[in-house]
Length: 293
Image (cartoon, rainbow, N blue to C red; front, side, top):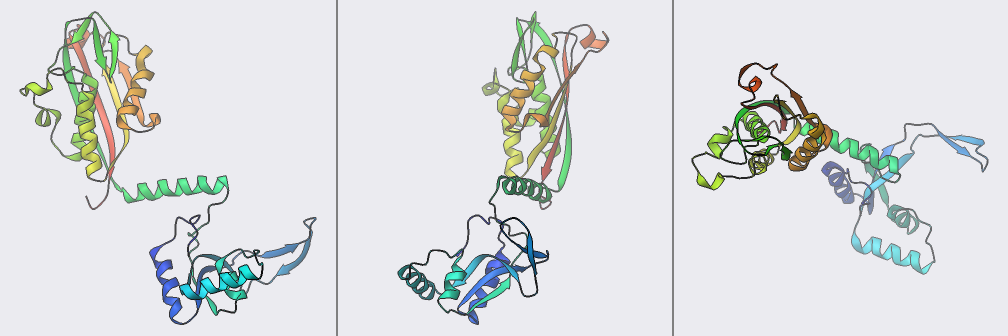
């Protein structure tokens, strides 16, 4: 019998609980008390210090043979006893031989809101510990301007005196980030997976390419830890659209927005960017994979 409020029970504790039934009519996982125990009155005044020797904190699972524990509960119901706090207490009252097996301090019970906060933090740490292979990939892409009235960057349409020329929607930022993820995976580049010679990708939403790279990451049991995009352009101005870009990237990547960085700089009027002939983007992606990958 296990309390669902203890989600961190281990297979080892369950096995010990079952094995203990070879020598007893009931078993319960429990841990030794390490804190000093004080009994207090209604005013909080200490009445006595309780010896902690042979005192254990009961956990679950608790093991019984079904007919025995069912009969014990039936007897308790007939006697009008509804003050027991666990099944082991019912079994003890019914005269069953119940013994302790080693529990686990990590097998905590979630009761208060702070318990849940700690549990969420623990699960996050456990997940990151399991994804110990940390990799960083880089991506770079350039697109030239062509006649038009808007550019698409990070999935956001920005009014401009020109558009970006490309086989797809020419979202140079999403292309660079896609390449960064593929690079971290050691899985080729965007051109290998979505060749411009293939007519099906003409005018395609570049979010499709990024989602494909993320799906490849997920298929290997990994996660995107962070993405950073630097847009190099003289125009249009990126600042007014930066937060919308971060929000759109976070949406596509299905991750918290604080894992997304979008920065912008000019090229100080040097080179093709300085001559306003196009836009360049550099991207970095940090991913985490299982070590066994």
